[in-house]
Image (tube, rainbow, N blue to C red; front, side, top):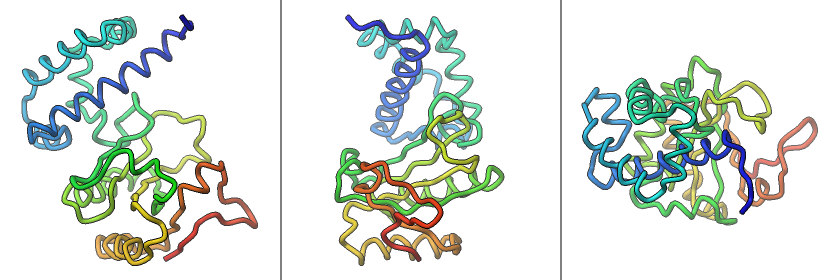
Length: 216
């Protein structure tokens, strides 16, 4: 068996738990972001989901406890905005929301791509709420995600970034439809659209080289 650093295992454990939590809450028609923003008490649902998670993944649950991430501590963090508000999220590098009609695996397809919205810290929370709500309503693409306050070794600068995914970069009509929806929501600055092809190749924009496929 491969040895795993305790901190790394705890990171994985928390990530899996949050996926399970969000999946179960959304299936019940009670997405986490609505519960938190509307200050709804969901302690009973949380306790049930954590117990089921612990039964199914005892080693992961133990890793959380060893980091002092007890059920009470996690619930308190969530109520304070962990996993909902980018600037208050420190356990995960990204907050992700899939559209109702989307397939989660589609964002990893070579055909997919995303509009990139780079923002300073004082603007990202409000911007993410807007993009998230539009994604949840099926107005934008197949998924959206935002970087968080957790220091990311892969980050290229101190800005936050929102990705708005579409399923097919070749479908220019759909790509530009999403861009116009973003523009109507107030994102009027020029944005770049990057194909997953370039991301998978590890290609990033730098001086003298652009890797965005569309710009609008």
